[in-house]
Image (cartoon, rainbow, N blue to C red; front, side, top):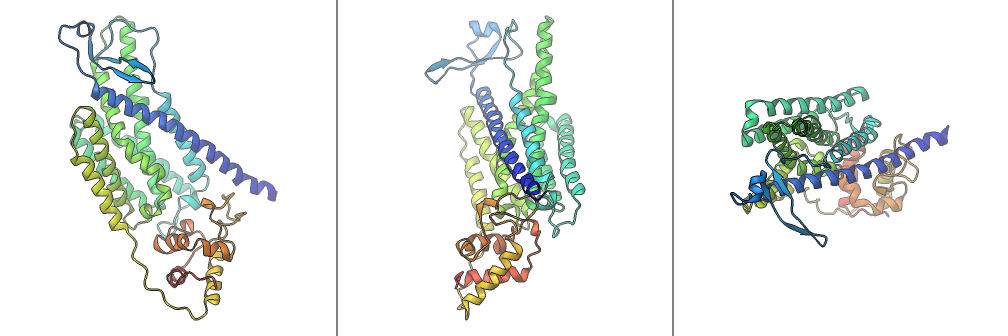
Length: 407
């Protein structure tokens, strides 16, 4: 039974690895296709009036070279005169990315909600409550976004973009009031990802099917389907950089552990949108450096605001060996249940990030990481599961600032 209890978290860790790998692969495929088609749409040029291409209904084309060959993609505003025998659809990249992402969310967060989602200093939630808030945020996110798209606001791109940005910022604020910082961030990302895949599933692909069905019936396709699909496709394009940051945000506690983590996320999302806008304009032949400059300035300003305070001048310690013994006792009591060769904390098969804190040598070796995570960011212990006190954090801080001596 003891062996089985240890193998379960080990098996989950392998499942985490495989699903995460799949999520990254499918995400690359989906986002790569999104970037390519937005580039293509912005780069094609209309054919000369009266030319053969214009008579065929081609609205734009371009020539490209890649991999030793020449390519000549053409776009039809509505549809070609004849439906081709083989038509390629781009949908499984999106579906696979969301499915693998939700599976990863379940494995990492929902199966271990008390460690990954609940921070008792924020809200003392049950597992069911935490998971309910997480899943509920995905439903609410898509519902609000879709209703706004269908409203009159959806016809005004800039105003719509501002409102959606404010909605996502407000969502981050609310989620940070109930979930741990990293869980709040990942659920904002899951909200965006759900909006993106629902656009494909419920608008883009159905619209394309209607166009194909009309052609098969010998009818002229209604261009409104293409217009709606393009609108949602452009939205997805602007969502990509913010959601990519959120996918990696759990590695950067300086962002999600800040007391105003929702505002930190808002700044990073805004920077991502500005940088993406620069590339979208550049594809159209407009080089507007003010957008990436503004995006980079936001990130630099944020880095300055989040910078930790410099440690106080080192103070001589009368008995370094006794002082280190206290630090080792704190690490053993508060950290070694996870950071050990064989963690005893349920849900962990190996030490997070490979950091071991089970003996004096490993503690001394990781002194800077301990100081950053437990004192500066207060990101560890995870969700403060082992109840490290402020006094203990202060003691760790004093030890590090005095030179982090082992003896």
